[in-house]
Image (cartoon, rainbow, N blue to C red; front, side, top):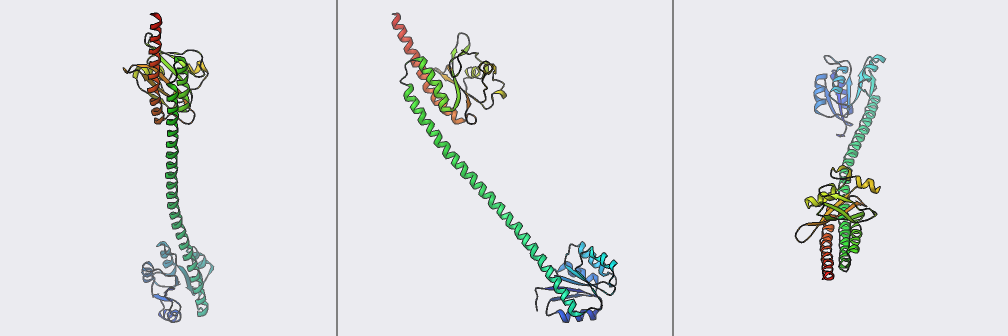
Length: 339
């Protein structure tokens, strides 16, 4: 007995049920029902591979049973047995996906062949559904694996970025040390200012930089040294980015200058330049008074970062001390000459 193949036979004629059960028992696991009501209960409770359905039954006809089966979502292969096969009947049943019509009286061998073919179709559909389900499951797993792989790649990329960034930061610190060694050897104020501006642009990877000195008497700052700018620029303290830095004694970092209300675009107009990003920091004396402002414009790659601020802060500490030292030295020299 092959219990893997199940067959539900529905017929109100007991002799037909007995005949088919006896003949098919060696090929299928047989379940019988003498009415449509019993058949529906069985079909809802068990999954049958094939249903052999008699059309002419009392209470619920074969059409009634088939309609309810499909309504319940049961898509089992159905073979309809009828003594009155007509085109109209076939058309009506075909809308419910009947596998085959068998006319009474039927030849048993031909009926068995039809049942076998119906089971083959059932098996193919079952395999197709299982394949699609496995495919969906595999795709889901692949998506999960792909997500994990992407996350791993992101982590790896981030690690590489951090590694490269740390290496870059260390490289800039080494450059800063070289600048410190050189800056201490400069004795001329004018040369020092030019070197400061050039060095800031280099270590911050900026397009240009400007050194503003504070003119306390006129409450202004003026461009003592600026790259690619010949005319002196004077800005009221509290005005523009650089003037605000002096007034508040705080660093300002701007990603988009033209979106910042503190930015004064007049200088861009005068110099035919377009400012995008800004990093502006005060230089203070030992008493905490702002004596100058260094302003870097347009980082060549992206915007200025917090680490750029750290680099510039370290640079400004030495630069401010050097400026004060040279200024004091020059003042002492002038006093000696007067004496």
